[in-house]
Amino acid sequence: MLIVDGAALNGGDGLVLLPQISINVLTENGSTTRYFLGTNTQHLGPGARFPFSSRLVAPREGIKSVSVTFHTS
Image 1 (cartoon, helix red, strand yellow):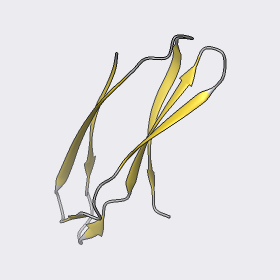
Image 2 (image 1 turned 45 degrees about the vertical axis):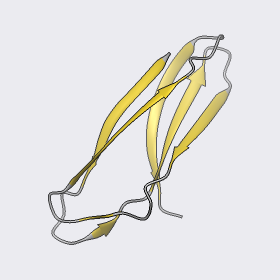
Image 3 (image 1 turned 120 degrees about the vertical axis):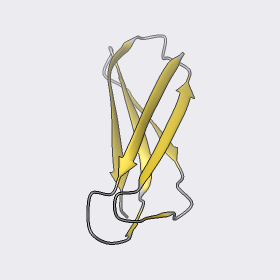
């Protein structure tokens, strides 16, 4: 089991649209699996925080790295 916990923070002065969150799992053999978390077009006010958590099945090949990215398109 792979557990990914994190939070998106708005450190700016205005209201921002929270983009879609992508969890990217790179295996030891070089393949990548992407898991997308919808944010329901939620807006974050100045200083607001959006916590997220995901439980994923760990790949049999082993995990080389995990990254979280935000997609604005």
